[in-house]
Length: 165
Image 1: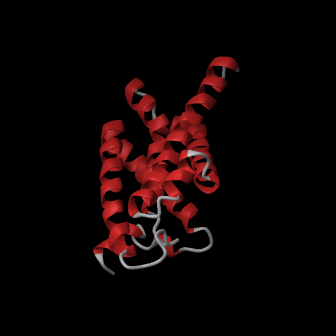
Image 2: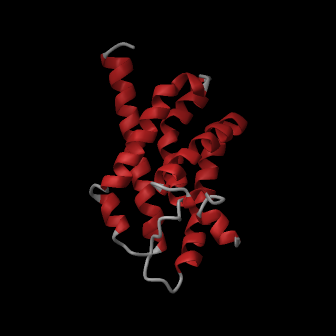
């Protein structure tokens, strides 16, 4: 397997069926946890950038000369987007010395919201997806991740501020 294929499919996760994008998002969760435990939010942020850059390269290589600009086996974009969704719990955990596993509802919310925005492709997520190029493949998941992170923050504010949990 080529380096581009290893990166693009996240070591073959993209070949799992059904719903390879969901498998890619699930694969991102233990990776995000490990990165956070090793180096906190800064390492997760750096890894997100690295995954985005490597994912763009791998997507370009894997789709070069093909009609399908976003084959389902490419799931590195889901990893980048899911990492961004996790930022909403990684940063407060790191900044306030909270064990990240104590924020388990945020993990669930980040996963569910990211998948919701990635699948339904509202507004700018759909715009990025319609670009039809490797940057669009990566950007739609980045934007979905940003939306999910905002959603996690809103849910946390409601749970801790309004509901007093």
